[in-house]
Length: 242
Image (spheres, one colour):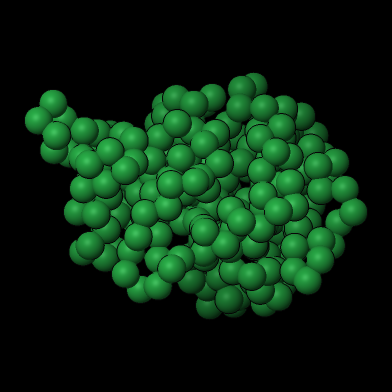
């Protein structure tokens, strides 16, 4: 089973606080799994916690969530060495790949070192649904803004580029995120792109953004592009609550 076309759900959400677990799956992640269209068996969901240094507690909580959701869960760790011998084969066997948040700069470096960049592109083209939060959103794009290098946000411009857009995550969570994303697009450091408030995801079919989805009331999504006068132009998008 595979999605009809290459599909990415890039989010600033999909997880939430839990009284029972360290964190639990939210509506956006469930929606990403639904996009795979698996009806006759449990969906296969692979978790990539690279951006958080393959944190063991994060991985353990993923498996707790996978059991609760009825998924066949697996994960790929790269530290101190890959836990799976054939990463490409494993990714191609999945219905969904879910990427956690953390350092997008570290994630990109490790993925390229181990060939995951090429394997993920092949999986995407084969219909495996790709999703993720924060670093797991920016990574699919050409770049965005990140705190990978320290508390002060900086641009990252070497994303995987499956999507030819820039990406701003957690757009409403820190006051500097919006103006920095806009200025980087205005000066040409980043191409035109899309930004999401916390709790919002962007659904891409192929390389086209087709719908913005929200698991929170009043959360927004935005298109940002360079205007003819060299300033950034931001347009608020329609968002569908799920």
